[in-house]
Length: 421
Image (tube, rainbow, N blue to C red; front, side, top):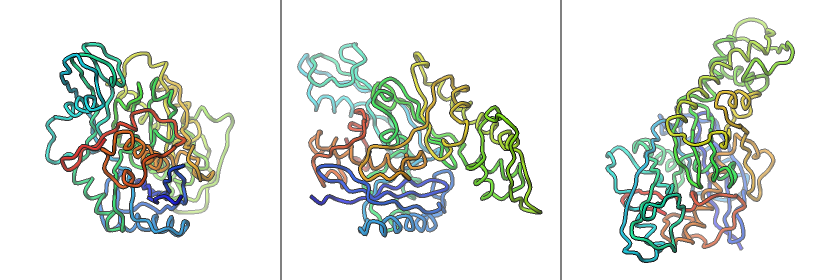
């Protein structure tokens, strides 16, 4: 059976990645990939709509030529330091009767009744837990009986003009957006296991201009924030320290970069092309000495942010790194020493049609968007089509190979006065 085709678009500071996927009743399959250098963006935010639209159009065109399909609908990832999150609580009365799915939804909706500034837009409303007659730790109260049902949700908001400018850039590129997703919400679908989402995992997506940070526990996202440090800051440090071009610094970072001087067992040198003069030999120890302070700054900021909301036994939690910088030699060891938690690199997997080139942290975000869109459709079927959007009109059942908890199925959105579940 032929399904519907859509594009998943990860709009980063340095690169725009587009995956074309097909959704059928049997599976979600990746059909093709397109990439383009990112222009018109700064730290994940559109600063020039025309340039951003050209970059998006180029990546979509490349992906379309690979698949031979016309692409007009897209799910788009959004990031940037304008993304903010906060916790809210709601309460409804039950009169001692059995709780229905509608009651559960009413309790969540009551938690959404909060003041929202005119320049802010709700991206996601994610249920994080329920309390029934004072008993907490409930993930789904449906079928239980009680008098008072309280819900706790994490609400993610974005600066409205940033959302609108992103939409305009996509529209000028010939695309209709059916969903806008905060990056880590989607990336989690590609790289986190069910156990990690349940027991506790800190997801760090290190992009070019920013690092997206999200903490998951008990099957839900509990906290999210965006830090203004990314891989381009490391490249800039190398460019200044080694007196090379930014392009050469990026190449050095990828081929010879080290997150810590302790990663070197012996003295090694490489040849670099400086902006003026003949090629020079430099030690990898010098390269590591330039990179290490920036990496330490990033993880120290993450540690401080984590302390503001973290609770319980941190030793039971884990850290998962994604983004191209996650492949920097020695970065997991440095992160583990600063954060005092186990650290691993997150590699996307599990969707049909994935080629080896996609199984890298650089494509975790865009792969996660495909998985997220599929899981959203599955959630829409479960919740009797209360979800709006293209995929909700396409098919009723999608079997997805990703192991995701309910936070993806019950994630909600609130746009233009309509709640999306």
